Length: 79
Image (cartoon, rainbow, N blue to C red; front, side):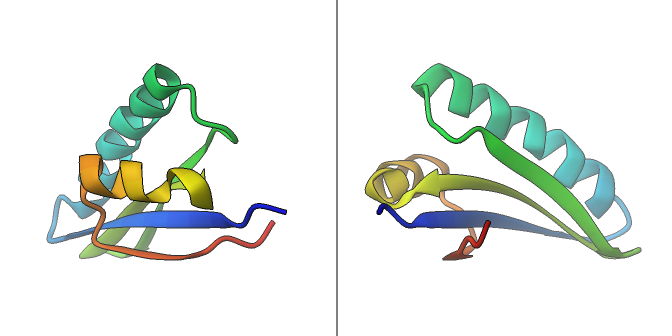
């Protein structure tokens, strides 16, 4: 079984929610271009000044995506 990794990009400030939402669009485009599965992306607003965008990749693709897109952090993804 291949583990899934959630790659996360953090955004802070008064425009954080819109920035995270927009960043997710680019993550979806990247996943489609690279044919990455499963196609899981998202964004979440934590408060008015902090939001994040994320994508989930299989562990064997994590290094390639990390080097290309430079996420701020990562964690194991649980279905």
